Image 1 (cartoon, rainbow, N blue to C red):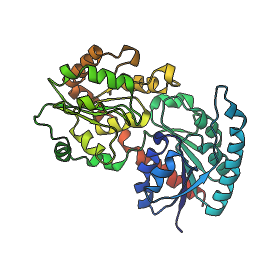
Image 2: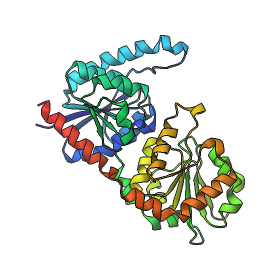
Image 3: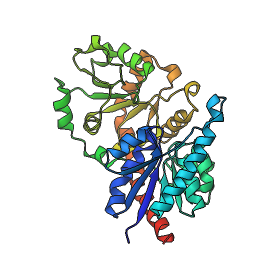
Image 4: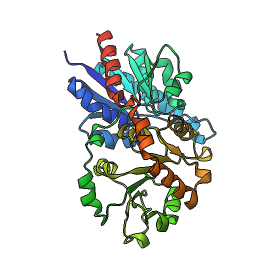
Length: 358
């Protein structure tokens, strides 16, 4: 009898891409897959593009601060719960896998009520509010960092790492060279500021261009609307608002990567063994999860951390020089890590939960 699984998670791409990374593994075991997300969240476009059946439910954000939506969103969550109960009863899954985000809360609660095994995954070192709520409904809690275990119920927690999209390992350096058309063989810096870009990272990189371009070619993924047309013809400097299928090839070409410290991105850098400089989002602009993520990778010798408050053209140039000159040390440290098998470890948990439910 064909096994069935419901995947859930949404709100940001980081709550969806690990689920996408699991799809080939689930398909290899012939799972029938259904995705539950919000009606119009980013997850809908990402998942339907993969050809996976998708159903939307009502969802609301649970906030730690005052907002008038705090009075209406609980009703959206309750509505989403009853919608999830109906969908789960109709689909009859063997297991639920949740990547977090607030849309996952009603799904995990509904599955728990219907006695369907729930496995959740936490990407960041400290669990977000949605996963903190989902923990009570979970049979197993997977995490990307060994440091996260101390925040989780010991009997449920498993350090797995984060699933990585298989296509990232299929990058073609020659394809990237054809795309970039760099005229020399200088080392390549790849700058990733996130899907919306980072004004501070963009500014620091562009302020350092004259110095950096003497030693490196630079690929700058600067975010939507952030391309500087005045720099468009600068030799050795390429700007993209965003890239999709080309990213794997650009990773293959890059010698050093400059990036924010989102959990999924840095797990990809680790899996690809790319020497990197992490510039975490400041605590003033976030709950501080990127700072903790970056500190963990720094402590394990995987990354060089440059805090946003200290970011300048001078500090960036010094960081690039240090990481490039010590790149072999970073690569050796990353090569010793065993987090590249995250997808297989999570699949084993899914298979075990499926068998228990039959």
